[in-house]
Image 1 (tube, rainbow, N blue to C red):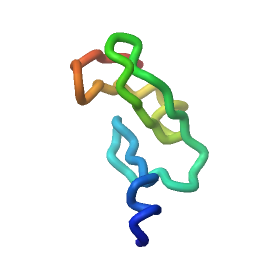
Image 2: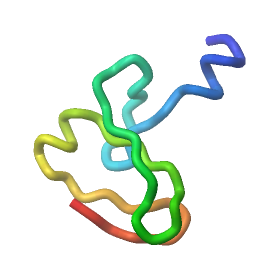
Image 3: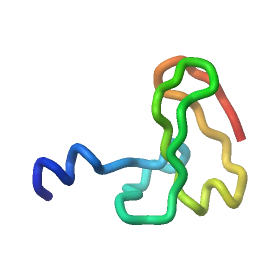
Image 4: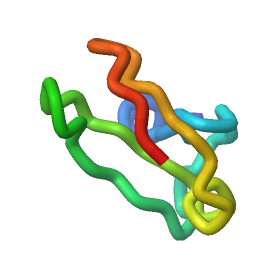
Length: 59
């Protein structure tokens, strides 16, 4: 993986899989604004996520 690909590689905050190139959602944490990425499977199943910066939890 090149350096530019590593910088843009994202992991699902719920399950930890690499979601580069997949249909995924990326959004800012409602509390602190940290960028959060989630895979389509976790979104569909409404799996909980936790912001790694502030601990905010959401479905």
